[in-house]
Length: 396
Ligand SMILES: Cc1cc2nc3c(=O)[nH]c(=O)nc-3n(C[C@H](O)[C@H](O)[C@H](O)COP(=O)(O)OP(=O)(O)OC[C@H]3O[C@@H](n4cnc5c(N)ncnc54)[C@H](O)[C@@H]3O)c2cc1C
Image (cartoon, rainbow, N blue to C red; front, side, top):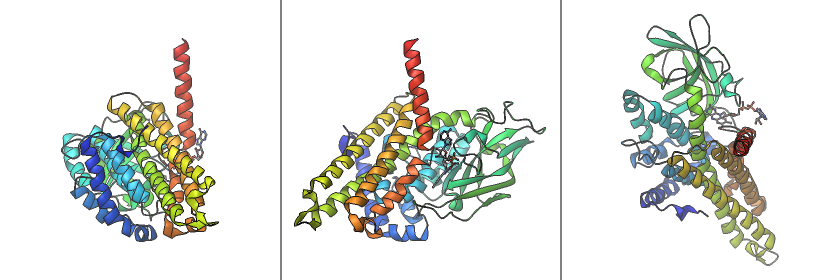
């Protein structure tokens, strides 16, 4: 069984305490205004960066090479404002960690200091108008011409796109005769990742989308019209982007799971606080057994999600494959987060439906966990596939 104190590493616990203090003092009072304006609280992100609290998953000297510490950062951000956390993680965990894992020394030196300090904002752009769950069907194409690539296409639903300094673009590579690299325009071979910087000729972003939740995390489109990208801006092995994504997505899904844990913890605390003060039928709400039953449910779901998430992170750190486990963590974490946030609104009654108590924001935010980074249906497909494979192999 895990709770926040299950982490034994004193440096991670210290990081949690420092970040908690910072976010609750600096970010929390501004959350309502940021959600209203739809803007990321960049000042809070920079403060986190300055104190070395933004990117512990990045390797030294940019971070501390610790995935568990990044989950803790995600939890603390989720507790205060999941919208802020979503943008922070898109920059650090999607853009930054991919540069950290696959980048050349020059790329790391160019991009990671700004990402770790929060001064610069990164985004990771895979999804397209016609390619979501079926990610390898992307139409954005890159063609090698001499010493550079020419990239054209469009991306949508990209976290941080409207405010990003750095864009990680996944494209399908074609030769100059129009033949796809790897021979199949829909296969796992042939994907190439390119880093494009804000201001590049032919790169354009759209207006931030209006959406249900995560309002302080700007989401938008990216348009690439014959953008010239030098070969030095290719990340990792050309043609291998989709293959690498299979494992990097497992790590990313686990880290983002920390946001949901933070949201659930906030909901549980909000319910206990409210129910201890609110009286109906002459007694505190806490004395009503149906409220206690909800608290028991919420607390169990929080504990189970956190515990499982920590075990997935430990498995990753031990070098084990977690394809199924990361999908289970994402699927169940999202489902439980929705249920916990909904119960929190219910326990607060009409007040829960009002903005002031913030649990309504949690309910709106929770829905994204069932969609972004691979929907719950896709997670269940992975779980079923891996379960069947494992059982068939055990029988053989
Ligand atoms: C706020 C927000 C932020 C995001 N940030 C990013 C980002 O930073 N970078 C990025 O690249 N993307 C981002 N996304 C995109 C996100 O990853 C996609 O929305 C998600 O992968 C689903 O793709 P889709 O929306 O095209 O839905 P679709 O793939 O069209 O799916 C629609 C529905 O059909 C179901 N479905 C699809 N295929 C199957 C199947 N085979 N079997 C059963 N059901 C199926 C899905 O589960 C879903 O319920 C973001 C999305 C949102 C909403």
